[in-house]
Length: 369
Ligand SMILES: [Zn+2]
Ligand SMILES: [Zn+2]
Image 1 (cartoon, helix red, strand yellow):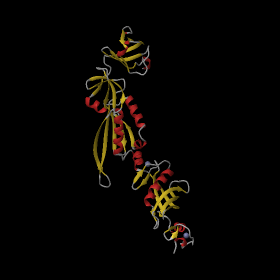
Image 2 (cartoon, rainbow, N blue to C red):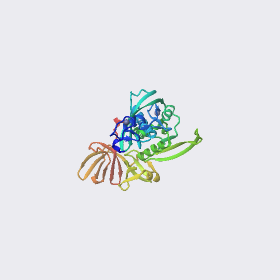
Image 3 (spheres, protein in one colour):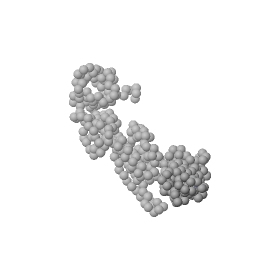
Image 4 (cartoon, rainbow, N blue to C red):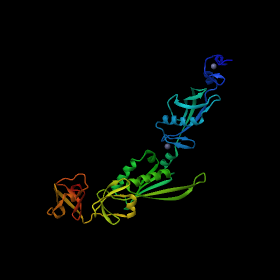
């Protein structure tokens, strides 16, 4: 018997591709390319749109419909089983037959791809999806401010966060990755600083480490057992304290006993001027904490001066504190300017060290407060 005369026992056609005992079309009609569950549940959070998969919760993929498609693709890819004469089957795509309407049954068209007898064939199957809205554990924790497993305590080296530092921390927190900021169950303002109640340990450590590297901070972890989980495992609350040096660019800081001018935050630390040598130095956060530091306030060397002229090799100031009578004339080489806007007629706070003068910030006029 020749292959050419092989006919499909169901439809009688010859010259067709066969899958197992039948022609391709008959095989698809009779057996289908793959077995899929006829109905699946879809449990999703009505608040944030995340969905349940294998005991855990996945972040939403976008709109509720997109999350449903992502869920079905993940779930059905695991469940799809090729029928007897099909070598491999997979999910090509899913599509709701009517718009997503929340609770209840939905019909979804599933496009199945398969490889059989050396060629690729497709089929469409309609399954039912039973949507059940709920509230995910993270949204529950947020609603009740309970159920968090970690606290990130943000404190300053000075005991209390200064208003400037507080503002820059708040703006930093607003710019956190969504995945991390979503894990913050609650932000509590305290007299000593800011507490973040965080859903899980990993997110708390990540947030604390981001704050530490952005603000030259230091972290200390403590762990407290608070009970047992329903499965009997230990349940603990992690506290990560982040201490931040309360210093602002333009302030004088003693680091390891040496007077410095703090210029700016820099990668992993800060840029300082050693006022004894006049050199700019990069001090890492670890070094800063190791050597010890304290704010110098405004020592006697800080004077209020007015810039008179800066022509060529000499720069001339008037000493404001002497009633603008004393003239300070310096070699321009010895004038180190750390303000953006250095103009004649304006007043500045300056640190005097020997023959050098460091212009550290613009003086606040009395009208401005
Ligand atoms: Zn046939
Ligand atoms: Zn949720």
